[in-house]
Image (cartoon, rainbow, N blue to C red; front, side, top):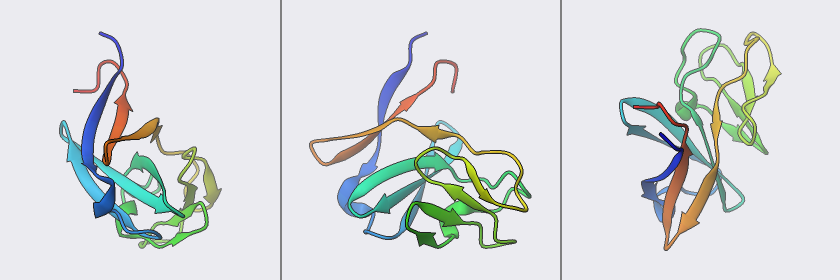
Length: 108
């Protein structure tokens, strides 16, 4: 099965400087708007499963509201402990005002 782009939200529903959580095929994702560009990451902190979409965005970083772990919304890389493992980030595009993400093959 090939990767495929899936519409997950309207771009207008994700305010600049904020995150919005959506569920796609049973998976929670955080859509993060940084200066008008939307990045999509898993909504679950790798430290303790905290809800990243409820965290604050500072530049390209999102901070987990539970213990302060930080991740780069562009790549999912860990920027600050206590998280030690990155989160998944997704290729994203805007088509006719819709946020679309490229889901890897096998994501149900």
